[in-house]
Image 1 (cartoon, rainbow, N blue to C red):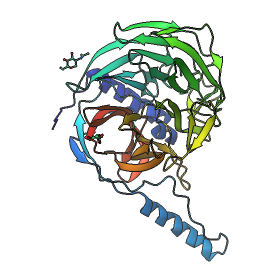
Image 2: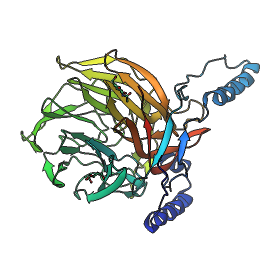
Image 3: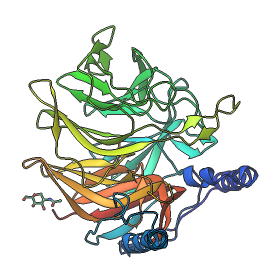
Image 4: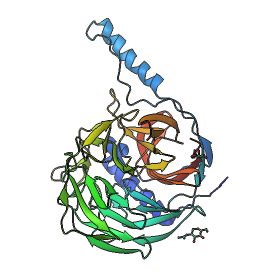
Length: 418
Ligand SMILES: *[C@@H]1O[C@H](CO)[C@@H](O)[C@H](O)[C@H]1NC(C)=O
Ligand SMILES: *[C@@H]1O[C@H](CO)[C@@H](O)[C@H](O)[C@H]1NC(C)=O
């Protein structure tokens, strides 16, 4: 069992103090909701036995409704409980060394025993421009290196062929700044970056994968960060090079939006979950200050196969978004860790997801296979030697409060037995 002492550099403590003072100045509830820099928690080895939220929420809502009932104004109704935690078995989680920096809306790609972790917000006002690497063989972080200056800092589309990692478009800069169409490819053996032809239009967090020799990019949010894109483009790639000068139009995806898992398996392409709408820059704000907008989280799953027509397959057990790098493939199934679900129907708060889901590729059915140590979105997941790992993201306020709070770099693993 690993017992690791967290070390905080003076750099990250300074950042924490800085961010808290900004948060104090601004004081807006949404900031707490959206982002807060953090130090790591003191967990070492836990069982994921946080309470189910459902009961208290339902009681609250029905209390309110019964008051209204007495006045004879509102007929009784049942709250849709898509926001509630689902019953799930406990898993034994072991705390591993935390990533060198906390990270939200970053990206990750696993190649063999290495997890390459890219970019992300450290706080709402600070974005990373480097790659950290976790080695599953000795469970250590190391080998940090820079990203190109022109590369986006969050909401990237990423995919790998096993040596090269393609990084497509994304948001350039902190807060809710604009996107870039610039795209790059990393040779993980030489750590050298090269340019790729830019996407026809920039996107935030588009679904991205390599399939049949082509890099596919679809969905995401459009230039204003909020409008869902349904366009789908591809370009032929080989050994870290684009074989064509331009991206080609493909069949648009039936539903657009960012933060979806995109997985190739058994020669089929799956796009899972996601949302329509996102935070946008406040009009006229010189710092492109994020402001909350209407968003709809969904559970839809779409599939492309030989026919190159989008097919609808069974949806996730609950609406789920911010899962673009939260998945791994194990034993002919897709495992997904955490995410965000529909906002609370009464409080309208953003609600995080703490379950581990499994999609069985033979039967195309879903099950809930466990609980994470806490609810958390935009996790970066890996699988090695029988262990499911996740790191980073933004976690909840505690077992009884599923709203987002701290941005974390913590890493955990659990032995999977499917
Ligand atoms: C990963 O760790 C193993 C075991 O310590 C080591 O042999 C290997 O060289 C490491 N890989 C990299 C890329 O650092
Ligand atoms: C995957 O399947 C193999 C063969 O049935 C089994 O030995 C292994 O434990 C399974 N892996 C997990 C993580 O459950």
